[in-house]
Image (tube, rainbow, N blue to C red):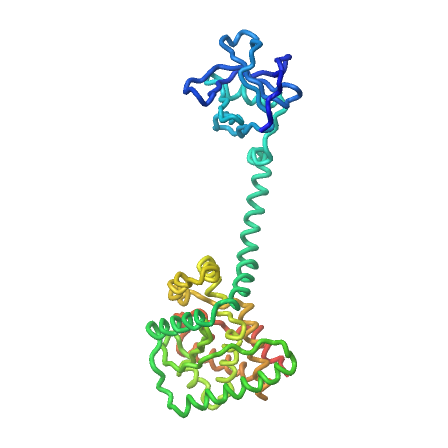
Length: 378
């Protein structure tokens, strides 16, 4: 706190204000004159028993103006200045006391803060609203997905396995039944996929020595409701579900099944499912990484599974992974075009029911871009 001057400045015709002063010792307000002396450096207060008289010689208090907490000049706020010693200077309760305070402050050279000036300018308020909306939109489109991508690699293995188990248990209870495929058929599909994965990993290791290995995956065979139809989907944590209906749809072309599963492995490699979980529960996910408690994230998992849908970007990454894996395994990526044709014919015949799992493969239509992507493969 700046010490008051030894000889308080006297009033020399500066703009003055009739106000009330609460000295912090008594609940009774004292009428005072206030002015800024010595080029605005000091706020001086003098008793004003009669407002028609000039300020008397005795100075009641003197404070450095820069240590005073001045009020914001808003339309409905009472004018109160908090003084360094804990006392308070308030507007005169008489008519137009607030207007007189504002006029005195302006005449004395007191400027509103940048915040107050901004709030009083509709133009600046409008710009602030637009900038805030742009910032929120940018965070939603780029910021949250980026944070989720970085955080997905930091989720502890034990928590990832727990999330995977919870997700699989939930879809099993809600929509799936045990597979009716023969053991031999399931073993053949598993063997063909493992061979394609092995060849792809060897090729990737040669081309990209620093590339991360494919995360652990687990293939599950299930029968599903008509609404799910021929389908496959990758859950957070590396579980891939293949429906019996898709195996039947690919009858005679086992490479179709390998291609579809290679697409789902693309989601596993890029941790798309875990990233979507973290995006949906960003606060719970980040808190879990910080304090090691993922219970809130697990609690929201069932609701997320019923709504989660892979973005076009995720689908493109998974399609690219499928094309590369098929090529590494010596399988033409055009096999995916034939699958799209069969799936389209099936949906035309059976109806295009809304899938209970938006993230499932058949929920994403084979548009011209996807067909051209696989057709263009050498």
